Length: 123
Image 1 (cartoon, rainbow, N blue to C red):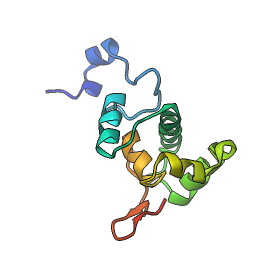
Image 2: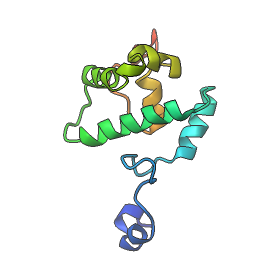
Image 3: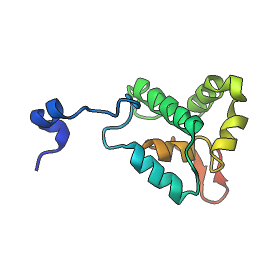
């Protein structure tokens, strides 16, 4: 069976991404994010979805590198959400770590060292 991305008929008939999440990974859905959030005891609000969109956008525009830099992503999120309080604000939304937990919900692989099982999330 062909993967949907290799079948031209499926590509023509189905949009590649969710219209509200244009930079989402092809296999990601908002329903999957809601399910993962429930498992992590989070209720997703508009603020959570804004962070998910920002992460997906960042990853889509930094795809030319095989490794996403934790420091650069950390700084980009801090700057993007500066008016709301930066990373302090993001920790209130994602107590499991604004990068590690939000990447899981966004369907993205967290950068290396974004979480440490012995100490919990560090980013």
